[in-house]
Length: 384
Ligand SMILES: [Zn+2]
Image (cartoon, rainbow, N blue to C red; front, side, top):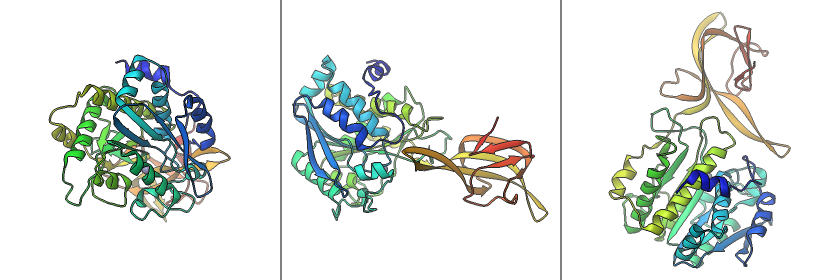
């Protein structure tokens, strides 16, 4: 299977970038709704529709939901690319639709999507509400789960740019987890299925993004939706779309999430599960918070006449300004930064720091400064 070609042919061209709201996807869902596959299953806090798109007649039931966290849109893009495959009348589509029934909730948190926040409009993290079920969005997801009774549950998220693949210095472009169902993190039959599937997906992804796949921390927290669904006996996989070098719009990562989705169902369809899945799963390095967006090394600073050579770390904040996500870099750390990496690194060679605001660097100031008074850095990047 030529996954690159499949992606090119099925990529949903009308959505791109990070800011994806219900206004973007509603027309797509209407277009895909050729045979009553679409329904409204509930309303968000602010009264927006929560949609479900169900397709297929197969006996293996697959539940997928995206944008439970409103600002995590990469998997939503990939999900629409995948739905395009399912509806393109190809041999592959027919095969998958006869083997599986897919139930997709492409945007569980449409209010958070508009606000570009992780939480919903009541400032509740829906991924900590799976026991209390205090929010309408949580109730809708749980009701869908209870009615649909999925064999597999795909919990689709984005993660921040801070994560690396262990300490390798590689960015964690995609991370996975088969969540635990108990404190002891034991492996039962249903969790094992998720583990084996992740190992199979990983073997595919390694061909495209070698050493850029990581494994998320599996501490048990029953308030997290994945842990709850695993506990309830559905084989649950967490997908975390992460940073690919240079790809802040996450259009490259989108492709790898699409590859992961497609290979999941091809693998299950062909029953082509890896052997020694647990060992292979445990061999995927753990996700580790070791990255900053920018590191400037060996910068000379001057505090009241005392000179010091240090390193600066800047991190982007994603800020919603007039319907656009802007990336604004702020100083978040100074010092040794031992064991940390920058997606962008620059060696200042002991060049001296100055800025337009007193000349002493302060945490949480914007990443605008000079080196040797001649090199100008604006929003983290050297201005040519
Ligand atoms: Zn998330």
